[in-house]
Image 1: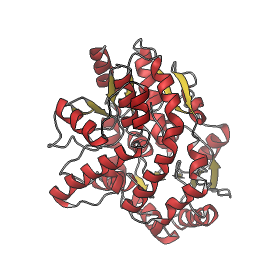
Image 2: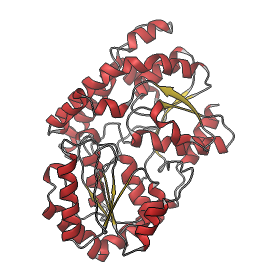
Image 3: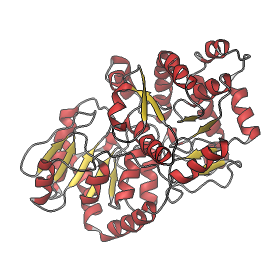
Length: 408
């Protein structure tokens, strides 16, 4: 069970495929628009009614751009999510009634755990980000800023409670419906910590090592790669790649921006100043470019495209960051909101990106300068290739399979 944008969904198609190949019957429960992602994977699908793209493009979604700070945007997205979560409850309960076990992303965790309790089902939390508080870094949802050891941990607890509050309005009715006693979100969280329930995180320990102060049961498994039913590139894209030197990928995934045309012009100018060809992914931001040295594409498998790029410019969502690392190519992260600042900082610390370039600071000059460093300094390509090879050797599905089999 998961909710959110494409990056919150795609990794679970690969995890589900791996569990299916091992003999389990798997159903992905998420927004209806993402059903094509499981085609051919052996994973079943149960739709949720909310369309995340429509919500982001609504007047309420556009208001997210008005907050520059991570905390300000988090407050707005919590309010937005609280208004939407009730619309998904019936379908989550219906899907759970035909299940033997629930695997829960961070975006539906509090509601999914309540449903599991009410239906007496075992469950596993399988988040894509390091959500548990730690002294080592600040909460990823607030960006890359460290508040010091004590401040990081306090802020981490605050963000966990904020996420729990997203579901606070819906949980009492669900608990009553399923015959459960009343309980606060904070009490449920404390109980999980006391019992040291396992939480399996779907990212690489090479990218974010397991914090030393995490409690027992919190594990880092390695990435879960999206299932690619046909990891092939369209013929027009193959022809473009063959017509010249390796281009640069630019895409913002499921992020939306206030002025797509202005941003597209800025990107094209930067690429041309750096002497680079570009593959521009339209995405939810609506980016576009034209000319012999530019090609605009819609959704294409990152696993097939990224290894053929000179560098990748992206919003540093968890899934796209993972895809770039797997491909072993340098990056220029352009974070927009939430955990993207955190992943951007990790790319810089790992030596595979020259700098973080937040969208609000992106100009033709700043992007061109970052791209020239990323593509002309061989150290970035060397470190990216070395790290990519190690990440590709990891098997993130195996620990989840072992936990599922052990629970069963």
